Image 1 (spheres, rainbow, N blue to C red):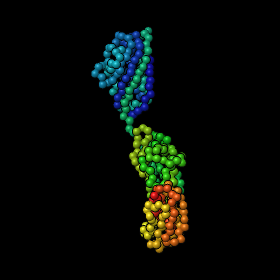
Image 2: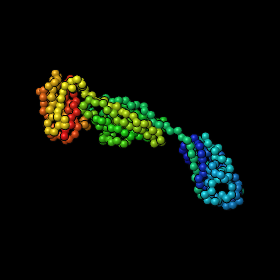
Image 3: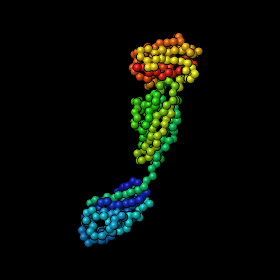
Image 4: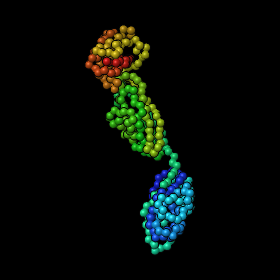
Length: 321
């Protein structure tokens, strides 16, 4: 009689039989052997106990060598040959319990058999293949591709490598399958490969990032990494000195906002008002050095006012209260 069980694991460090229950008219007829996937054989007991039936467990660490009675429920014995013979082998594969009835004529039945296999298994952690900053203009949607963000693992597929968001971009919107994401949301490398991860830029010049970790479902872990994003306006450059010459007030604004260009020699021609999600709310012409803008229709919050002339684009952060 044989009973087999499939096991997955690494290098063997311990084996125990935690359940061995069955019927036989005379245990003295039986030779019971445990066989590893590599063919190593360990005899648990060999023709002992002139009695019927068995119900016991086996562990190398037991203080009691195998002996009668074999049918005392809950009793744990050391096998005749120690299970330590398996140590150092690979646990992976089919293990077989073999019961040899050396005296035909007596019937029997193996009712239950449970094997405990302990192995040391090295964990292969995910690693970064690509983590390349993306550069995009204002108010654009960019698919984050495999060439820009990719992790791999030697023993896991792309669908098994799960990203978890730890920190979101400070500007613009990160989206999964067209929907805005939140901290702790997850997506896989397969999702990135399929083009499901996108970023929508805001309407001002800035640099930001999102942070992530990666797990592989087998205990492998990649710690926090940042994916960098840079947004620039292709229709104008930023100049800090000129920005310092431009005043926007009051902050916070209530019904009206003043753009004061009197300290600047540059002639600006238009402005855009953009929310923190990069949506263009309104635009207007600038035809004087001082301009009053009606903001009474906008909700309380943070906005960006971009002041432009084709050569320069100067963003100003404002608050509407």
